[in-house]
Image (cartoon, rainbow, N blue to C red):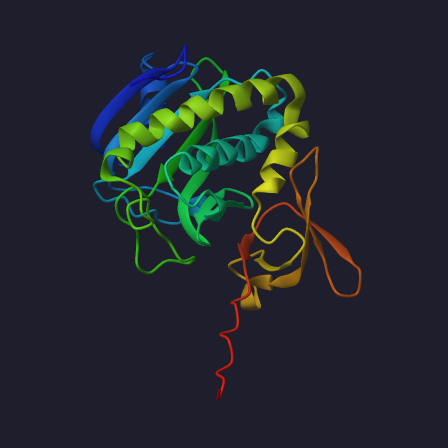
Length: 265
């Protein structure tokens, strides 16, 4: 694998989750900055909010260990860096590049269906040092049929089999990620944000955000997606009455497109 300089590759077979394995390898002194742990299968893969992440054979499941030289309060911005890297990598694989988009805060879409998700976790090692665990997956050859958000995979979207292997996809992602990461280390979200917004689905259009699993209707708010804050990455949502919400967590949904009316002609 042609990984960027400084990356170490730790491939595994079936594990609980790659984030858990990253913690174990860190504890044993076998993982370091820019170690990437992958698995062919996960028995206990997790998405945001401890949701289960289906992890059958054929897809990419990975965790990237990072020790970012920026304030910890900014580490959450790495979701934008990694999702942008994944999107750019997939554009190199798929013929219809315009269908690759990002979805706040941590998903990549193809044809408005989820193909990749990210889970960020901060871990403190036994020595007291904090590191970022960037868990991510890409549906390469299969996808769940029933999920909170419609899903897809690379082969289903027309990618060639040889381009849709977990190893080749990981290589492309890390090649895209490293220069973006260096940009972020130097300047923060400032230069990453415009590129991310350029790929953001429904920017300037209507979206709904479910902010809690425990409120009626998920505490859903609907309005116009105005962008994300440069410093925090919080989503800005403007309701019809002009009120702008600053949202730091939640699940974004897009309005269903109305079917065209039938004509008698």
